Image (tube, rainbow, N blue to C red; front, side):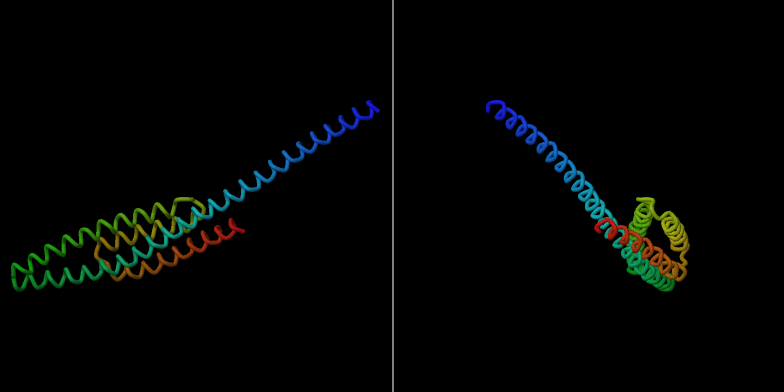
Length: 178
């Protein structure tokens, strides 16, 4: 009877050891699965943040183009008035317009650089990123040379490339969440 009790006790300890090993393997498996899932969710959140930032910068750029076109028109009109009237008040207004335009131009240049960097940030869609970079460079050249109408038409192309980049990034986000 004592021998039987020892064998049962030994089997019990063996079963308990095997159970602990199985439990440890299950815990490792669940941990690995959760880590992969959490990584995908984190990556999707980062891409979504990028998407929101990119979209807002493209929107700001198009709004800024309209504002710069308006400021150019106002500047030209005030310059003509100043040439004909030689009024000091118009001269001060002209100076204020120049200062305002300089601030706008500074923000515009910063925005173009930010968009260029954002386009190439993850390096996934190299073709669209390269197109976006080239279009932004061309836009900058047109804007600084005073070709407002061509710049406005180019803005439409920029929006098209931006939509391509946004759509591709959105598909990647959906794939990560699924």
